[in-house]
Length: 189
Image 1: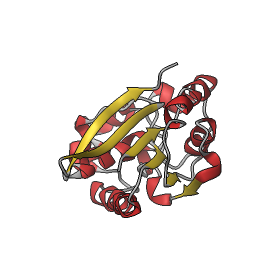
Image 2: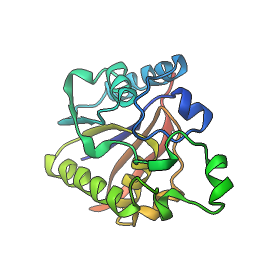
Image 3: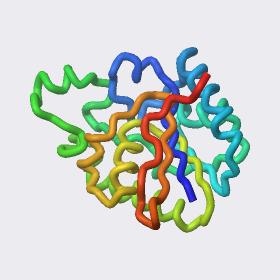
């Protein structure tokens, strides 16, 4: 089995570096273009399950990639709840908390790394129980935690997995050991 973990296309806030957790905004024109470039890649696959975050940007990416009619909404795939940091850039946050790192510190009024880790673990368990290929449409930070957890690492290891908008990531196995086959892979186009 393989898990295709797909980050949504660009939004105005992802483009400007603003933390977008619970704010539900659509894709930009470029974001739609990135999402459409995913279609030829995923159309070659047969998915037993397609899960998507309930946020517009993830659902629109799923639809443009050609899997919208198969998608099941999974709230566990929502982006990190940034609490008081919602809508702020890293530079703005660092003005008051210079060494803040979401994967280590979490967010005041939002989620801790352990809470995101628990959500991601439920998604991984659900995917592994399917016994076939799975597609996930979600967000940058939650997918970075998913990559870390797939390998048995803690949520804090997500800091090592950079992830662009509109990217495809393939999680699988090497001789029965969880492995990452592709990471931050841009769809051809």
